[in-house]
Image (cartoon, rainbow, N blue to C red):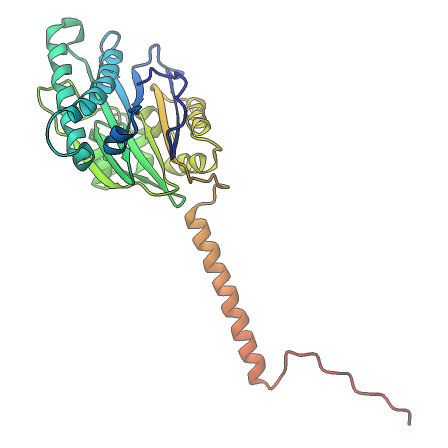
Length: 318
């Protein structure tokens, strides 16, 4: 487990990662928190995987920053503690185990908020990912996001639990409109604000060459998906990717704390940033050129002409 901006540990076999969390140009304190945990024993790691998490707290000093840290540390602790209890092998039900860890953490945060008047308004978003043996499990509450970069294409995995996020999902607003909307920070779900919480779970494959981004809305609400994808594709390392993402969000004047955690499979190869849409367009143009050449050859053949050079007639003296 790590505190914000502490140096990452040595690379996990098959994975590399990096992260950065900043207060941002318009905030006084950083209520975001980033963390991860990798079991040292190879056997438990194989069964449970590595966990990465990002949280965005709310409630002000002594509330938001406490909530985000408690959420990250709590969900990591709860997830790995579950492995010590009898039942199925942890890797067999990592997704449901992660959801239960969210629920336990929510209960602990809500109890803390109710017991301390200074923290009565505290809460936090949380997005966490488990990567293990070709499998990926992601859970989230709030508007902190998970993105997957695969084959050069960036896909948003999580759905925002926010007033504006619901309008984007309903296609009432575009992503560009959402980034500028005055109510974009109003969330509809958070950890710690109620005694129970609904957690979204997404499960799929972790493939060779994949890259994962977990971030708070200080990043995703400032930079477009196209820009983030370009940075993720081009950065030589995940640490440089996280640094560049956060730096560009700061330069764009992000109004919130900014956090990014980037995880890469060992076979990821940084590219020149060519979009898959651009590559598809270039392939289409090449196909049209080849078709044109074929049609021209057919036309020449139909006119009885040959593509081979014809010898010039011999000039003879009269």
